Image 1 (cartoon, rainbow, N blue to C red):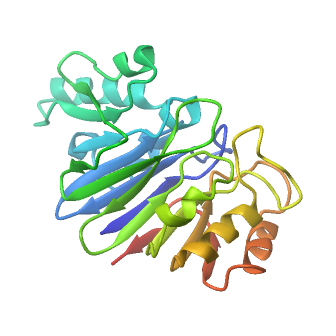
Image 2 (image 1 turned 180 degrees about the vertical axis):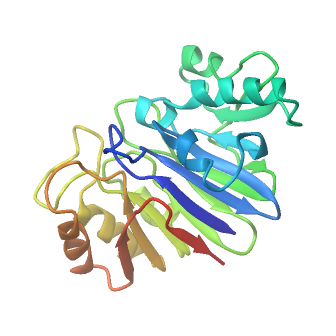
Image 3 (image 1 turned 90 degrees about the vertical axis):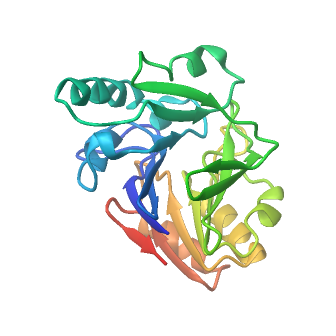
Length: 244
């Protein structure tokens, strides 16, 4: 499995950056996890628009879905340019029917519902879900290719259930929108101490802090996390690759 970070900013993209987007690849299959602002531009550094095989969305906040429209238009343009492509499945939950309905665009993309209570098979990946604590319905994902496991928290404040959900993950992509002295309970986000506590208790191998804030000294997030987690810790960066 290969995971490439396309965007790591919370809320909106920093200049020349992108908000949430992660490219998962295995056995020639290209899965995009979340499609935030500027993600479509970034993914083209690695694959062509028509080479995407599937997209899956954690929730419908703009910083996770803003580039769905551009992706749909991209597939339309590629069709007119004669590029061979499938009717791209975009997986999403159905607890917001209006947003889910927008995932289908002509014959170029189609919304496919996922049931968060059941495992989902997407190409070579098996995905299980956990409901997070966020102002809208949002689902964390545990993604495995049968050999390696990646857990992506999406957006959430701290939940003890993340510990069992993330157990022994090889890579833990944990949101970290806040600094250690900030409480994200009401806004539905975690701080660096929350992320480290989950990582330590769940015995993950690598902790990558993502969904980053636009203020403060970001290196302090890593310093704080290292106080309670002895494994590998780093900030998410565009273009960073993890591969097994």
